[in-house]
Image 1 (cartoon, helix red, strand yellow):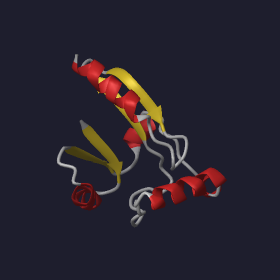
Image 2 (tube, one colour):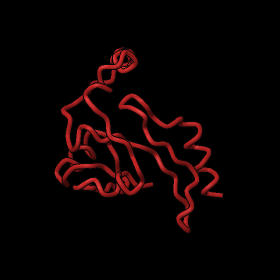
Image 3 (cartoon, helix red, strand yellow):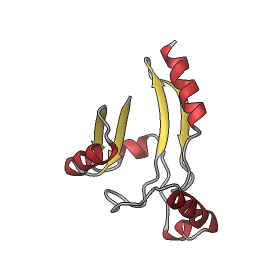
Length: 115
């Protein structure tokens, strides 16, 4: 499993410590990898949607806190499960900052790739 983030190596080191990630972590300093897999970008207007506020409140109640934004604050993320031979087993491009791939679908794709 590999994580790819937008930013600089120093930010990746901080993320590794904060998240406790011990796996491979790559840094995309200019956003080319994100563009290559057509991950969306967001805008200030998208951040002001009621759903965004609801999700932020829900996350805060569950104990999550937003840290200092690093890298490109307008770049949305995504989740791809890619098997040998460049076979894409799962793809989710976040529609907004509050959007995440369904964990059960990601795990199913990982299991399929391991089989």
